Image (cartoon, rainbow, N blue to C red):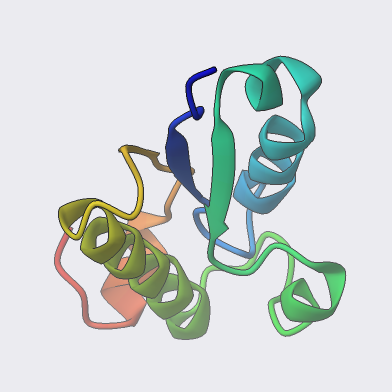
Length: 100
């Protein structure tokens, strides 16, 4: 029996819909049958409480960016086989001083 691939999923901007979508995808039995999902970024309610829903901020932009960076590092190191990214906010990236 082969081992399913580990697939990274970034949660995107924690002030947006990305964390909910990422959690639902990671919990879906069809996804779990095909791979081992690995979430990157804030996804638990206590983590998301630090971000105002629907409000772009430097903090939410930085959190989304850092999740992507960690996931890419894991992909390059072979710890995950592939990466799917959640939606980011270009406005939040700009507030954090990040290029997109």
